[in-house]
Length: 146
Image (cartoon, rainbow, N blue to C red; front, side, top):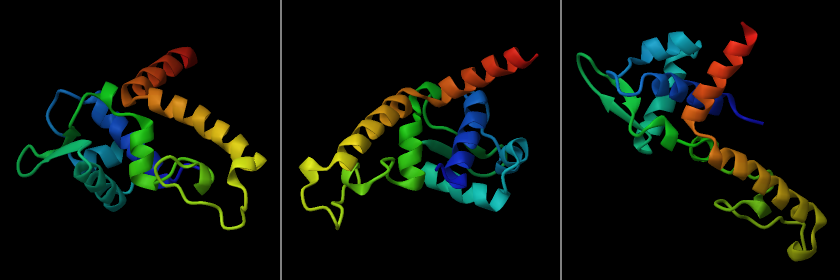
């Protein structure tokens, strides 16, 4: 399941994506717009800044902005940064691989084989879905509601 921290990170990135090309946004404004606790958001934004996803400016007119275009920030990158492995089992993780303690023949494990397929399908979607895509999807969904 997606953690609340990752969900907040994605929501904050969408706010910053909609603001891309404008002045940096203050944490308070982002927190209010998405109903995210300010202290929690500060930690999340700092983590994303340290990873190079965000840029921060101190002082008057300071705040946070995307370090690259919303089209170039992908869900897989954000999820791995905030929560670590995307795979549902450690033995199928591409970046955080660990063998299962109880498994004696990994290559012949039906569970592993199935979850490799699940991982591949998830990664296809997450690698192809950018912050810009989510922003556009939200606009489409709002048009369908009206």
